[in-house]
Image 1 (cartoon, rainbow, N blue to C red):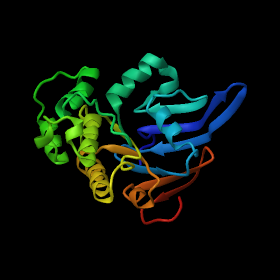
Image 2: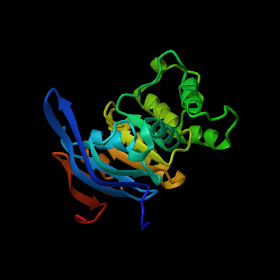
Image 3: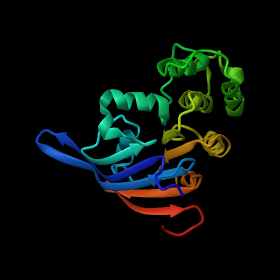
Image 4: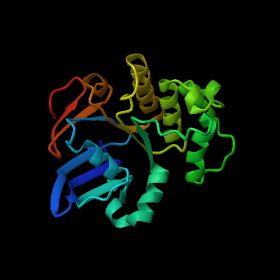
Length: 234
């Protein structure tokens, strides 16, 4: 194992304010993720899963604690620095596909490249990715002409088109039927195995969690258990 992972979280706290009342979402979370890992995060609603994701992704600052992503201290970067790191290093896949309805699948993917400042030129790896995801023949269709599974594949392509080091997937199968859910999970597994993509996935589905190398169990803003595939609690 690497001495320093691609994600290092130490003593992480996050408290939201509701008027004069503080509502703790994270209560001292420690987390280590190696490059190339596939980590599932499970827990009941309100356990802090999404808050942890948003902090790791640079979308929300913590109240206190240390967060290092790809060797960068997020607390030291400031908002502009976190935005830059997020564009270069992190891809997001959500339960809602969040595709722009007036753009084709091709243009939805191109938006991500434009935001990151990636030149719009032929990229053999991009073409390989489209074939791998099975959407090369659907690129000129708008989201309303795509099935839910196809829309999620486009969302995955958009998330990884810039080759981010980390893919954060928040309930990526939540709006899909069983067949499409399994197909998307297999795609995430293959992205991890064939492209070396580091994947963190929030899921409420125990079967989906089994796709990860490790599973972190959260409750009341804390990590209460970490298990490995086919092994007992770490």
